[in-house]
Image (cartoon, rainbow, N blue to C red; front, side, top):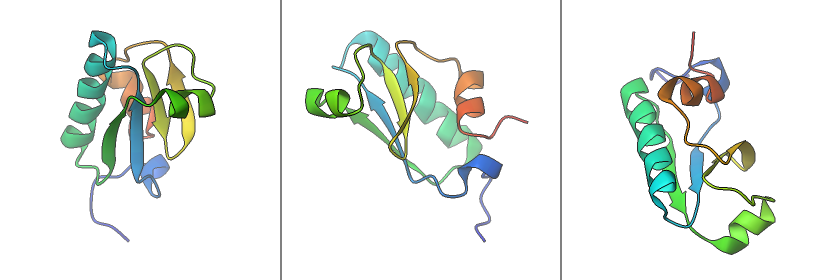
Length: 92
C-alpha cells in the first residue's frame, strides 16, 4: 500500500485531465486542481487537454471540464478547491 495522503476514493487514480481550449477559465481550473493535488500530496498526473476531439469523445460541450481516469466529473465551471477535494474523495 502507498504511504502518501490518498483518500479512500483516490487509491487507483492516475490521471486528472482538465479539458478546455486554453481560455482563462480553463487555465484557472487547471491551477485549482494542481494546487489541490500538490497540497494533498497525491501522486497523480494533472494534464491540460486542449484537443477538441477528446472533448467530443467525452461529450463535453462546455468548458472547463474535469476528467478523472476517463470519467467526466465536472463540466462548465471553475471549481473551488473544496469541490475538487470532494470530487477526488479526499475531503473529510
